[in-house]
Image 1: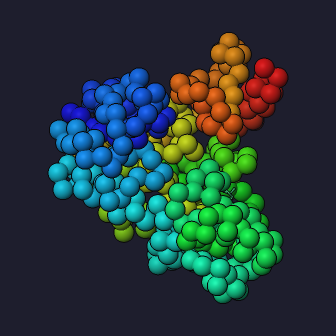
Image 2 (image 1 turned 45 degrees about the vertical axis):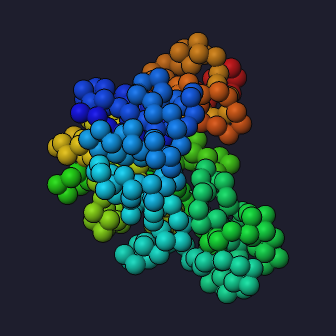
Length: 363
Ligand code: AMP
């Protein structure tokens, strides 16, 4: 069997490695010759919207994507010839922050107050809906904190609209959250849904830095609402594959921030910390295979390596850390790899995380 992945970044690389383990041949479509997944997959070198690229993957059994902004129109074109999973509609919605929040609202999933801003004249009405402080985000093409501006005043909001390029945007109330967490779920072709244990996420400069298991009491208190929201999305979208929903927790209440129609950085821990990884279960789902177990094997955390890599021997000296490097050139803010840490207890995991942080800071 062959699976085609739109995009050839680190997510495609890890999906490809999982595909090899299942005896499935991975193909990627990416315009960059040095795409991280090119080392482990058949590489169709070309733009996603180039008909020659999509023709090249027509012989695959299923097409999926690893991109934040998979072009829904391209995916619709492919879907006439090869099954695309998850379907183009999910990508079209997740790629537009306004449509995404409207879908949450229509399903009764709580969010921060929000309003569309298509032109500066929309700002007073939007500010009346959100209040201040707020966050202005472009509707499309935003990720890792890019395409968004925090605003403290009406004048700053108008200025931010210009700074973001004057493109259609979404104004959201700035949430004084207690923590951020994500719910990772997978839905099979037969509609079966499985969830991994929720994780708490720490961002630095809008980029995910660490994921660790959500505290047991919070898991009990919040897990139900998170799973219910995720299940509603999976079912309404008739979704197949891994879906990640990111939430803010404010005083015991969950507000949905966004969803990602793909495997996700906050699910990397599942490679070592769960019976079946997000990568394998995504493939199982889109290939119509039974899903694997999602039970946690023990306390597991993930630490991203961003911007610059410590020497490999410094990483290799970290006790218990599993090393994942993506083969990318260093650049500020770029995700170059991650470490997974597993421990016998939550306290031991915290100690291992502190040790790893210290070693990274001093190497
Ligand atoms: P996003 O691209 O929407 O995932 O935003 C990236 C990060 O910015 C989030 O993980 C939060 O840390 C922060 N952020 C985004 N939206 C808000 C908001 N409405 N209130 C507070 N923080 C936010």
